[in-house]
Image (cartoon, rainbow, N blue to C red; front, side, top):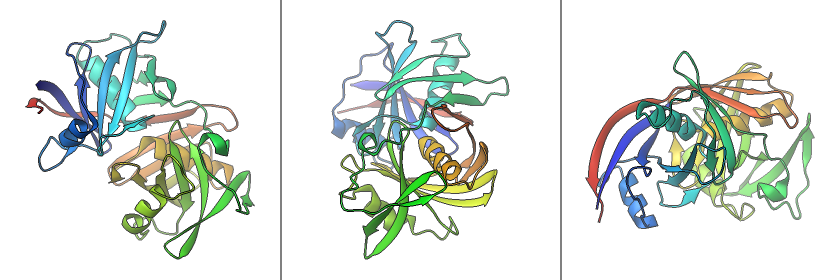
Length: 284
């Protein structure tokens, strides 16, 4: 089977985007994994599949597969690539679209400067919905944020558990560059207290309006940027009393802007999306 695809990235978080509106796509997890392989496939952090939505008032359905072949709930950087893809291919003429994901409806907007803003919805803070198992743990408070001790590798990290439609464990570090992301990331991702695994965020607060962030993504490893990770980190930083409502997030792949008014308000993610190349590949 031959599949047409577009390679894209959002601040270095790279994607294979596939139009399943005009071609039939039905692949097994091992085939998604093969496409994402950087040596034997196209290579990507995630694969994004564009489908028609059967829900009234919703423009598209958006499915996301991690590099390990597993389907996941949400991807903020991917949502921006999604908007550029459907706009550039003429699948919509709208600047604001409604998109169905596994975790709910998102509403991205193509801005006049070419950047894309995504209404990511309100953060999910109820621990059962993250989900995060706190049995036997004693929390500490920092501002409005609840911090939990997470033991792994013979040490303890104090994390905040936040979901942006997918689970995140956010910790504050002194220096993002020096953070042991490659070592601690897999241990946090697979920690028994996160039954669906988790994305591990390492946030350095630079000022009240700026942070530096690295994220070890569930099923993908460390990526150059993570949109939902940036949202979760800023939400936690605001709740801790460390950040203002609008924050620039420096990632290794570029800069994102996150805005959150607090409480049940939605989180807004703004950043670029870039098309790299198009192609066709045979899938066994």
